[in-house]
Amino acid sequence: MAEEDKEKKEEKTDVAAEQMLRIRADFENTKKRLEREKESAIRFANERLLAEILPIVDNFDRAMTSLSEGHDPEKVKQGLKIAQDELHQVLEEHGVEVVKSVGESFDPHVHEAVATVPSAGARDGTIVDEIQRGYLLNGRLLRPSRVRIAQNQPKNSGEEEET
Image (tube, rainbow, N blue to C red):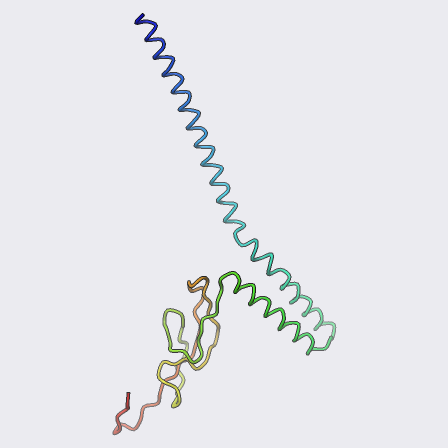
């Protein structure tokens, strides 16, 4: 009887070990499959955005062809404006927004000052000109706005400046 119990225990142990090997193999296969899916998702993450931008690229290409063929520049300009508006709309739909600049106070988190401009009419640190637009993606800075900021001219040395 002891011999039978020992054989049953060994058989159960063998079955459990075999099940464990299968489970481990299934786990490894699942892990590899998920890794492949993740890599694919990363590789094609921008697919929808790019598919929406391609017709706009086509419009820009048509505009360039029209210009080289001597079509009315004013009509080409109108077509370019439409393509530009479409591009801005697609970007907005994907969470891209323009950083507000001109007339705003300088914010080093979203603006890059490239110059100061003497100004008697604007407060110190107010943005008076935008060299290059800045953009946010879902609230995260993609690119800062490159700006010129106002710098008030000092008054005569005998006068005090009011605040």
